[in-house]
Image (cartoon, rainbow, N blue to C red):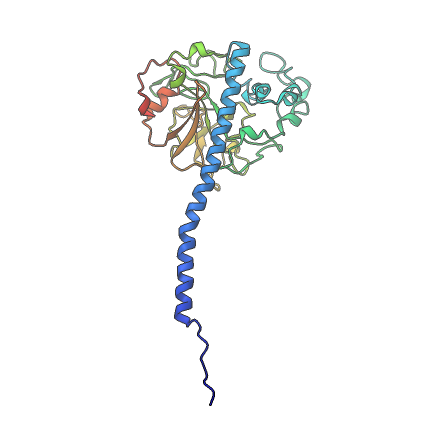
Length: 320
């Protein structure tokens, strides 16, 4: 008589237990993988800001001034001016600087605006050093890319109002190359500034920071446009308060992951805050060439202090 052996196997309960264990392991692993990927993206973002900061310092060394933040609304921003110092000479040389405020601004039917035929080919060329990999690249207007870095226009609004709701303008590294359309004595002087003007100290002055690329035609991050070329420290990093833009056409909220925005008013003139996709804060470039991660929890007074160049505030190194 032959002996028969039953072949061992998993019972249904054992199989379900194994599946449950695998599911738990995957659930534990995914956040770690995502965190590692975000750390790599954040590292690349920091490197981009260092490149931009080095380009700004080399520009200042060559021209004895910082680059203009913008040339009116539409005739070039820092996005173009620092290109030669990012090994983008050919792109820079293809840009036509022949028009702008103070001249015939729309000479030739506006062909020398960033969107005109004289410059749109250059504007449509995405510069990788201006793009943070944590965000999704957008082309909000005319196939011209949005970017993730903007320059510091100070602690009030985009037009650098001398007094905004009791906050006194205390200097900024960048401004419009030409007089502000707001005019009069309500706004700061335009033009260019230099390292010598950072009397608060280069290590205590923000020159650049992250911004988000707006979705669905939202023009935030569209740094070829003058208003979006800068950010203002009136708003805290990743503020829950809205950015203020002068028309709903350029402000799409609510939509997707766009941050809040409203149409600008007298109490909230054109201004855009620094924002990022990184958890907990934003990367900023300082006047001494370093890059720091500023937490959302930073004191608003400290944030505005490091957003000014001549406020004379006493800010300790561990305050940001």
